[in-house]
Image 1 (cartoon, helix red, strand yellow):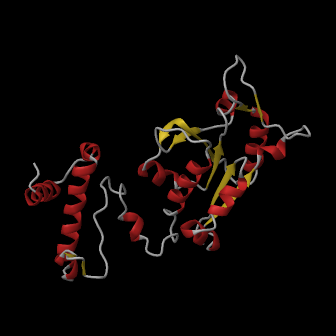
Image 2: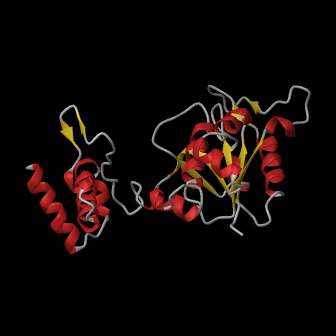
Image 3: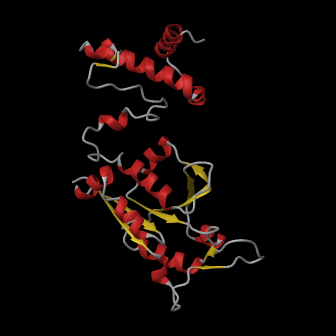
Length: 251
């Protein structure tokens, strides 16, 4: 029997997570019981009639800060649904940048808890006592952690065996091997005078694979040279990249 990944999300807007998760890859994965996604609203763990989850920051300043106690109780309740201690991740622009290697490593976990902040953030004591890691999807600020959580959850779930119709799709994605993906083509063969590359119509799988690798190397060199700088190219890859540069007139 395949492993089921359990994902819990601590959020003030559970409907946002629940509604989006019913579409596309996430929706299929839920129907196939490859994963479980459950939301926990900190307001359900408050003790006052107003269900207060935020307060003014000590020391003054703009905005409000999410209080530690409702968040901690929500996390602790979510933990009880896991057979083993899950990784607890706070989505924050101060966190480590999410990339494919991080996701591939995390996809091996049996369960995760994501915390979605709002306002000016969360009480620092929550990060010190309940959170294992902070993750960021980029160097910019959003109103809350729900959209980053959805981005990360979809990226994780598509790595689970059976989540994609063809598992090779995830293996050939951009960043899966440190390169950007090559371009893809389908019918019609000619569109507004632009023809699909003939090698893709040849049926010669060796030549097709060679072309795709060359295009992936060239596209990465054009658009993300920082990725190539991190990658140790094989002799074949260096030759293919040189061919790409000659064919495109770039050096």
